Each structure stands twice: as C-alpha cells, then as structure tokens.
Image (cartoon, rainbow, N blue to C red):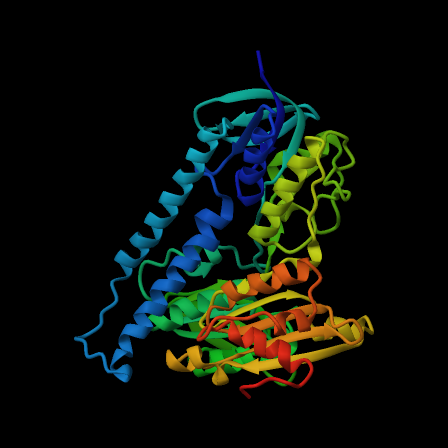
Length: 464
C-alpha cells in the first residue's frame, strides 16, 4: 500500500528543503523527494556553496602572492589544486549532511529517487534499487534548473564546461574562454584568473552583467580588466569544436570573424527550468514558452492541488528567492499569510570586489518615468577601505524625488554582499535616504559609505 502524506515536495534544493521543513513545523505530514542523492540542490552541491569556497580560496592565494606589498615576507607560494578542491568538497559534504539532520529534527520524510506524476495525487519514485508509489493531498514542484548550452556544443565537463565542470577542474588550464558575461561566468573567471589561467570573456551584448545598473556594470568591467581578465563585447559565438589541444571557438562581431584556441571553454549563457522527468503532460500542468511552470500569486498551478516554487517558475534564479517562496507556499497551504516581496530581493556577485544590489536601477527608473535623486560615495574616501587597501568601487543610492523613499541601492566594493542587507531591511520598511543618513554607523566600517551616499542624495556628504 502506498504511503500517504499531507504534502510532498519534489526537489530538495533551497526552495524544496526549506519548504518541507516549514510544512512539517506547521504540523503537516511531509515528504521530500530528491534525485541527486544529497540534499541542497544545485546551490549547495554544484553552485553557490562550492563556488564561494573556490572564490574565497583563490582570493587567499592571490593575496598571499602579494603579501610582500604590505610588508609580509614569505617563501614561494605554490598552488595545490587537488587539496583546494578537496577542501571545497568537504565544505559541501558537511552542509548537505546538515540539511539531512534538519530533516530528521523536523520529522520530514526524505525519499531518494526521481519523482514523476502518475496522477495529480500520486507520485512514482524510482532509484537504482527500487520503485515506490506515494500518495499526497498536495504536491509542490521545486526541481530547480540546469545550465543552458549552445547549439552543437554539448557539455562534456572536460573541455566544454558548464558551471558544474568549472567547479571540478583537476588541472590548471593555461587558457580559458568564458561564453557569457553574467554572474556565474564572471565568478568563475575570477577564480581561475587568480589561480593563474589566462581568461577571456565573450559577451553578445555591449556590456557585462545584463540587468545590473549600467554605471556599476561599467565600473565592474574596468576593475576586472585590471585583474587581467580580457573581454570581447558585441561578439557572437558561432561554433565550438574540440581538437587535440583543447577547443576552438569561432566568433563573429560587426566588423570581423575570429578563431580563439583555449584549453577549456565555460558556457555560461543562462539556465533553464528542470522539469523534463516530472511527467507534467499527464496531469496537464501548464508551462510557458521557456518551460517555466505557470502559477498564480499563491504559487498554485492550473491543477488545483499542485504548486510550484523556485527556479521552475518566473523570477530571478536565486537561492534566497527560492527559500522565501518555499516558506510562503508552506504557510499559505497551512492557512497562514505567506508573502514574498519581489521588489526587494537582493542580488550579489561574489568577485573581489563584490557587487550587490537591491531594488530598481537607473535604467528601470528612466524607463518607468519615475523622478529620482542619486547619492554616491566612493570607497576611496572610506577610512576602513583605505586602511586595508581595498579602495575600489562605490555606493549608489536612488531615492524618489518627492518622497525621498529609497528605490534602489547598488554597491561595488569590499563586503558589498553583507552590506546590502542593511538596505534591504531599510527598503522593506519604506525608509527614506534621510532615515539612512541620520542613522549612526560605526567607525571605521565599510558601512559608513552607505551613510555618506545617503547624505549625498541631498549633496551634503562630509568625506568627499
């Protein structure tokens, strides 16, 4: 006889595991089906966490090579890539086991295998050893996303890499080409460039980081160029072929065609929802042209008891956005008031310096014809940043002209990813730039740059 649950979550990534835990906390008998063999999804296993581990270690390696600049004399600095990868894998393993512990603590039933629909209340779960059927009053789809490739360039994760392969390179490449100037591509570019690889980024648009505030984007590229990362903008990749040496990338731009040889190519042109094995057609769940599941404001699909959250639905493919949706849908199912404020979801690029933002950028405000004021403050004038030799970048605050309400904040600089939280909270409570300017910030801290940028909105900054 099939086991029966109140709610079953298909997918154990940030959306799914958080959702399952919250459902169980609210008193619902909950199961979570995960095919990977470990919980945490792309983020924890092959995304956010391993990439941040490598970003941190590669930055430490780069800093160590330049210790003499600040009066620290060392011997020869050597890269042990195998040990670095082992350290990264250890971090991932510890955290995935931590999620399993949270399932046990919160009495969530963890079912390993590939889940697919037999009907709107029945799921078949297959793994290498067995197949079982479970029944559930409600089912939540949170199967995440997978990397997009280019036509004729299938990932082999040895020479033609997705982000997954770029996190598991066993031998330092001499040359790497990165196709796509978005967050993932630039983070991986930073890792391998710091470790000694010659990196070139090819971007189809005339700027990197599409969707980011243009002023921040332009400054970001200037800084990355100084870090020896090369760029080709307005360039299309026509063909990628493997050869005995590595890969050959054929490109075209407005005025020319070019051929680039490299040891490896990382294709980082976006991600697509992972729904192929769910058998959605059988139960008639509607999807859009991009394969994303269509839901209403309560995350319900057109099939009454089926819900969807995370990367499989519309919106930014961010782990924290997925987590918020997981909690919201759990509380809605339990009869509470779940809610996600999509206007205040921060984004972070974990390079050095970091880039972070929340709310609207200038281009969006201009397009929507919203009158606004701008306040900016450079880290060059921030005492903490100067003291530790990290003076690049600035804080930019956009406030509505009449009400002074903060509409958007954009930071490029040291620890930007941590500082953006202050502004997310401020915006959630409808703060004005005056509120920020009159809030005492500790000295010396990077966050003083936020206060000064808020003062700058009305042209009364003190230190620049």
